[in-house]
Length: 237
Image (cartoon, rainbow, N blue to C red; front, side, top):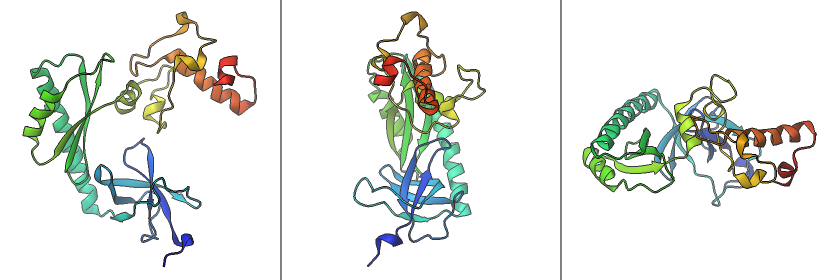
């Protein structure tokens, strides 16, 4: 019988600046940060980098942590590079198919294969908030990539900026979301309802986000760190 103290949990990241997921590594005691491991996820088999060794892991969300399948081999790392090249080719193909179908207002941002190649996801964004019917595009792509399950995933403007990168509105050479922000907190006008002036609200050309609003939210973090008083709406948020 395995004791609770025998559990070893590690944090694994699948993208360079992506969310960290926790896995049971009790069978891989030599696993260290910087190593790569193959794991089974809800989206299929994935290969990721170990970025955390948790001494006091939180409670697992679904009763137990998923176990690590194995430590990655040099062949696994080469295979990941192969899938990354194939994903780039798939993205280019998808953009061409979307143009042929005259899907105006749809931007194909990137494509991702799972490590076993069984699933191919196309990440896209739209210029409007209206839902776009991509059934015809998905059907064409599924015929092209018969060995993989094709899915279309819509992402928001901050996720787009995270993938594409570029200079931030503050003047930094790289935007925060593509450098170190692994998760995005929801931002809404209601968070600053009492202090918003519409003439101060601007849009980031890269992320299409409310620049002024984000600055104020970041100021709220700064106020919390320094102990100074935040604006009324920030304090109430």
